[in-house]
Image 1 (cartoon, rainbow, N blue to C red):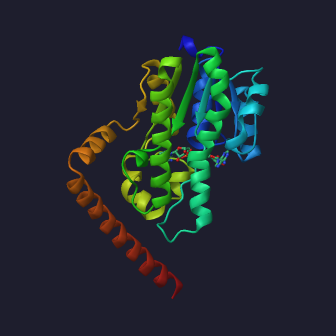
Image 2 (cartoon, helix red, strand yellow):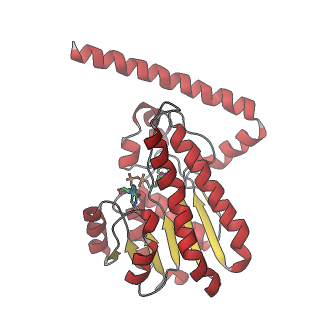
Length: 265
Ligand SMILES: NC(=O)c1ccc[n+]([C@@H]2O[C@H](COP(=O)([O-])OP(=O)(O)OC[C@H]3O[C@@H](n4cnc5c(N)ncnc54)[C@H](O)[C@@H]3O)[C@@H](O)[C@H]2O)c1
């Protein structure tokens, strides 16, 4: 894509998974990429492989270092780092806070640091890796679902507020993607996400297509559009269907407990 040749691109959480696929895809388009991750070693490995700059550390505060590493400006910022916190209200405050911090506030803080430069130039692109959980809701994972709804709301807000001022925003909302995060979702992920899981490279391709088409909502699993429409049109029916999944999930949890007890005996 011509528009990405030479573009200065930051990808957070790019030491593995979807972020590393995004970094590779942008580099293959001729972009100058800065690879961020909390895991400095993982970030360095990806950066070395694609000839990118490395800006390790927390995604929340990466903009100044990335700007310097990319020679003074940023054209595309991919807010991709995320944590897949599971559980419900019983999850610790610390877990809720981490999900809020990484899945939402890191986007807010990045936008705060980027907007002055972008508004002055009249151009900038913010790519938010949300999740289908931001449009729907993921069983067994309240902190994840709530914060991904927040990330989607923030991306929508950015888009509707600044689109006439040259700021392009994309919200990427995949279901299951074969990464370390999917591996950590246990029976809920096995039930809901694994059967239709795609590769990180598929997500990266969808992002490039979405940028080329200037589409806000990027759905690597196109069926998510139908689920979101069904949820909006018939919420009672949608909740009933999701509760059916919840009960199947509870059955799987119970089976797993029995299996673990048998193994221990
Ligand atoms: N895997 C899926 O099924 C799936 C589906 C939908 C959305 N997503 C979203 O995609 C994004 C990437 O997830 P993934 O599946 O590649 O997971 P992953 O766990 O493979 O990668 C996430 C990366 O983010 C890094 N990270 C975590 N907190 C960070 C922070 N504060 N600062 C910088 N880096 C940080 C981790 O070290 C890790 O390398 C996340 O936002 C996730 O919610 C994933």
